[in-house]
Image (cartoon, rainbow, N blue to C red; front, side):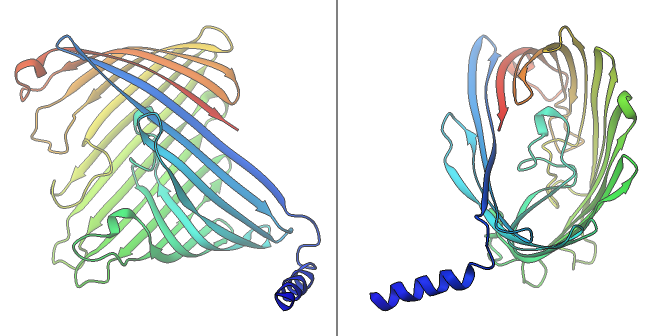
Length: 352
């Protein structure tokens, strides 16, 4: 035991020059919880969802740092927590960094409120986890490693090898980010490709716009691999106390069963003008058209319309609530599904 204690003390003394100052520790996080209700043919149905994200950051020296994260995200009032990974970073210079550990990559996230969680939806690519090595050089990100996504365990095995490449090109206030993601399942035919580009354009105080394109393809070694193309335009405009948000999304799906689209419908449109009643309170009017299907031959379209109120208590705490009518338009609805339904809900979001 004495020798063990002496060895630990000697190791600590040897490492002390590396971390002459005490490590700086910080915690950041976000919490969001919501409740929704839907009245269908006179019967009310409700659901809850909750999100809790925590990020722990440690600054050892000017060069060495680390991050670790945990999260709880799911239906109900108490989803279980999960370890989201950790990485260590060495900063060679202001523009060059090396990392080793766990990384999550997502590209082309929606601004549209109902699909804005990149863990579930994306124009380009939903979140994918990799354990490996990353280099960031002047905005160029190259990540290589082993896949850790839950869907890696399929009939074709659980082992994947991943490569993710992205580049942030800054043109004044505008940013253009092309990306490429390749996943190999180490089988004769199963591999997947995600690629595309996202442009975030800024027009001063007048507003901004996001333009995004995503290509998705699986089983690339087939003679004619199936491909899906996704497009989105998302402007946000400001006119003093009046603002306007909108999203137009459309996907070209080669074969509905070939490549999963990371959105549950092939087309939708959303527009919301809002009016700032006070500095903290705003009222918006939402209008949406949804195809509600990946099959362009299906006739299941709906229109959603209604008011939404926003209250910003502080910069890091906000509330919102909505009421809307859901109007079926498609010919494939039968029975009570043809009836207009009413939905309502509220959410609270905070960050720290």
